[in-house]
Each structure stands twice: as C-alpha cells, then as structure tokens.
Length: 410
Image 1 (cartoon, rainbow, N blue to C red):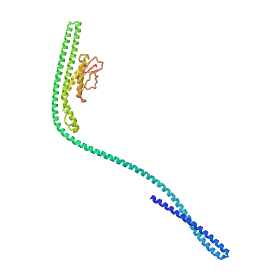
Image 2 (image 1 turned 120 degrees about the vertical axis):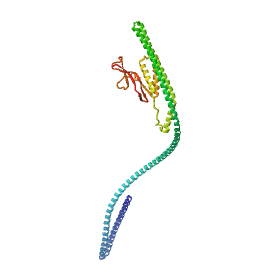
Image 3 (image 1 turned 135 degrees about the vertical axis):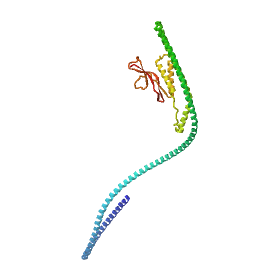
Image 4 (image 1 turned 60 degrees about the vertical axis):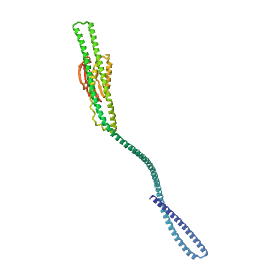
C-alpha cells in the first residue's frame, strides 16, 4: 500500500513536468505569431512604398484580423496554461508534503525493520540455547534411564537376597529364643546370688552391732557401779571408739566385697549376652536395610528391672552409710570408687542412678519422705541426709521414685 502511494506521487510529478513543457511550447508559438505580425507589417510597408495603398489596406486588415484571432487563441492557451501551472504548483506542494510524509514513514518502517531484525536475532539465540538445553536434557534422560535399569537390576538382586535372608531369619529367631531363655535363667540365678550376698552382709552388720552394744553395755555397767577410774573411763571410751571404727571398717569391707562380686556377676551376664545381642543388632540392621522394617511388628521381650533395682537400693544404703562416716576410715575411698564404678556400669545398661543426699528439701519434691529432727541444723533448714531407695531412670524414663530421709530443724 505504501509503495503504491509513492508510485502515485511520482506519476503526478511526471504530469506536472509535461504541463511545464506545454507552457514552453505555447510561449514559443506566441513568439512565432509576433514574428509573423512583424513580417506582415514590413510587407505592408513595402507595398505602401510601391503605391498599392487600397490593396494594401485590405490585405493588412485581413492579416491583422487573422493575427489577432491567432493571438487571442494563443492568449487563451497561455491563460489556460497559467491556470494549469497554478494547479500543478498546488499539486507539486501536495506531492512534496506527501513525499516528506512518505519519507518519514519509510524511516519509521526502517526502524521497525531494524527492531524486528534485532528481535529475530535474539529469537535465534534463544532457539540455539533451547536446542543446547534440549540436548543436555536428552543426555540426562539417557543417563537416568541407564541408572534406572541398574536400579531395577539391583532391586531384583536384593529381592533374591531377601528371600534367602527370610529363610535364615526363621532359624535365627529359634536360636535367639533359646539364648533369651538362657539369659533370663542366668538373671534369675544372679538375683538369688545377690540376695544371698545381701543377706550375708546384713548378718555381718548385725554381729558387729551386737559386739558394739555389748561393749557399750559393759562400759556403762561398770560406770554405774562406780568401779572405774577416770583413766578407765577414757580407756573404755577409746575402746568404744576403736570398736566403732572397726565396725565402720568391717562395714566398708563388706560393702566393697559386695560391690566387687556384684560387678563380677554383671560382667559375666554381659559376656553371656554379648554374642546374642551382637547377632540381634547385626540382623536387625540387615533386616532394616533389606526388608524396610518388615519385622518391626515382632513383640520385644518384656524387660525385668528387679535385679538392677535391688542393686540401686543397695547403693542407696551404701551412700547413706558413707555420708555418716569419717572419710579417713580405712577403705572409705576404695568403697566410694567401687560405688561409682557400679553406677557407671549400670548406666551402660541404660540405668541412671540419681542420688539426692546433701540437697535441700522443698515441698515440691514428690518423693516418699521420712522426716527426722536434727537440732544441729539451722532453724528452718531441711536437708536430705539419707536414701532408702534411689531414684532410677531407664532410658530417660523413671522406673522407681526415690524414698528419702530428711533431717530438719523446725
């Protein structure tokens, strides 16, 4: 459409050029008529000079009339040509304006064409990038397909192994049941053995206490009868102190031996259960990896905490006795070390033994409490001075609350 308008403008310019050429031709005709009139005048003058005046006038009149008619025609042509020239000039101005607008439009089209060319270049670059990305994606898909094939092969292999392991687990479960029964029987035997040790320690303490009571009774009996001098009284007090110290040493020795024997029994129990537990852990990990936890629904054996609770209560008695003894008594440090080793060994089994001796008592404590009066304490003071039962946690959960003795001055 824009090209057609430009062609129209060019056509109009050519038409204007033709009109200009016609005007020039008309001007040449006028000049020729003037020349002819001048020739006629010169001819008339020649005839006048020859004396043919009448004929000369007639011919002159005819020639003048003919020349005037021709001149009028040419003047009309000139007027028409002038009007056409004005029209052509008007058309020429319009054409120039249209040509200017056409040039501006062409420049705008060229700008749009350049922008379109740049956009096309950008699109080509994006297409190249998309082609490269598509190629990379195709490569990734090919690699993923290969990995999927490898995974499928591995899954098939694992399925075959799973079938084999399932058959092995049946026999392993029978072995574990047998070993578990043996372990439980060993625990029962150890419980009986520790109960015997506990009974023997109590008998030994009663014997020592009876000896001390007999010595004290004899001393006070002699004092009542007035048969003792001051030196004898001091000697009796020394004997009483020595007997009390001996009682503490014997008590420490008995408790140390008790803890050592209990430690040996725990070690034997751990060695007896070590291999079954290792097999159970190994197979459990393998089952979790292969079966995805398919055996998680098997019922776990119920734990019997009675043996550990009995040991914890013995530790409570030992700690209470230690809190009332002189740290310089023979065997005191060894008993403390044995007690700490026992607590750490029980912790390795998941049992946490919590001692509260020496802590201040408050009403927020929910333990079973026995209160005793102690005027030596500051007024209003309440301190935990003994443990009847230890606070015991198993794997972070309390399985036995504490029973405590609180000394107070209220």
